[in-house]
Every structure is written in structure tokens, then in C-alpha cells.
Length: 214
Image (cartoon, rainbow, N blue to C red; front, side, top):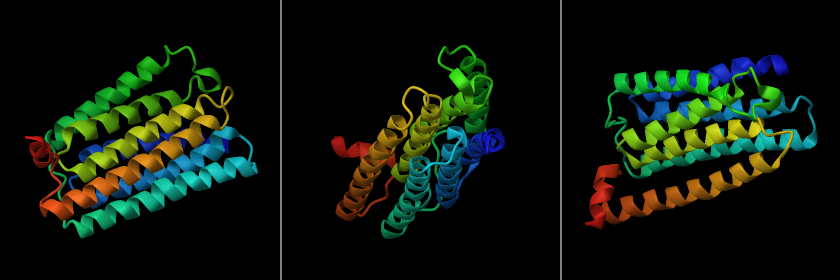
């Protein structure tokens, strides 16, 4: 199973770049769901042995990240009649350049961290840092609130991967805690999007939502 670790992490990094380069909402949501599948398999791969607890965490990760949350986001798109375009504040090319530079920085910086542990020399820490950065870029450079929800998901995926490097110290605490935080955060965001779209019958453009506080 350990032979799958590096290919899965490379896939996560490629999905990060795909999200930054995508111009359609459905493609962005689909990429985040694909990352969820990768993280579920990574959970089993990183633990090294298959136990009931490991399988339960992996199934929960896939169910929440790859099935439940994408369905909620697709439903929000339909119910709120959200336009299919991403409408970024920063263009696709600059976003890809930022993502590429961030990935290079993550690879270099990860080697200096003291808690690399058993995963030193692998892509666990670099992919974690790069995924967190990608989530931050999506959160800050995309106009639509639903796209920013996806940015939050990607950022959380990076934290989830970081938890894999702490397995020796806290075998399941990190993963379970992150999953619970994710469930709460996503349901709160879904409720906000639903109520705003119902009350104002407007788009979920984050710039327009900011005007509500005026």
C-alpha cells in the first residue's frame, strides 16, 4: 500500500492546479470531490496496516468529502440558479503561476520542518502546505461564495494531509477532529448561502454579499 502514497500525493497536487485553472464551477467542485477520494485512500496508505478504525476514517473521509459535500454544493448551484462560471478576481494564468510557485516553495520549506518524522523525504508535508496555499488562493481570489466554500474544503484537505505526518503522536485525533470541523463548517456555509439567495434573490457573488453590511 505504501507504494500508492507518492502517486496519490502527486494527484492531489495536480488537482490543486486543476482547480486554479478551471473556469467552470462544476469542474471545481468535481476536483475537490476527487481530492476527497484521494484522501480517503491516503488514510489507509499512510497508516500502513488495515484495521477497522483506519477503514472507518477512510470511508468517512470519502463519504463526506467526495459525496455529501459535493452534492450539497451542486444542489446549492441549482436552487440558487448560480451562473456556471467561476468569475475570478485574479485570472487563470496568474492563479496557476501562484500555485506553481507555492508548490515549489512548499517542497523547499517542508524539508526544514523539524516534525517531518517518518514521512521525511516524501511529499506528505509539501503536498499539505501546497494544498493549504491553494485553498487560501481560491478563498481570496474567487468572487462567488460557493467557490469560496470549495476553497475552504481544499484548505481543510491540506490540514488533513498534515495530520498524516502526526500519526505516531496522535493516530486518529487529528483526522477525526478535522472531519468534525469540516461537517460543522460546511453545513453552516450551506445554510448561509441558502438563506441569502432566498431573501435577496440575487447572485452569491462575494462582492455583492459584502455590500450587505453597508
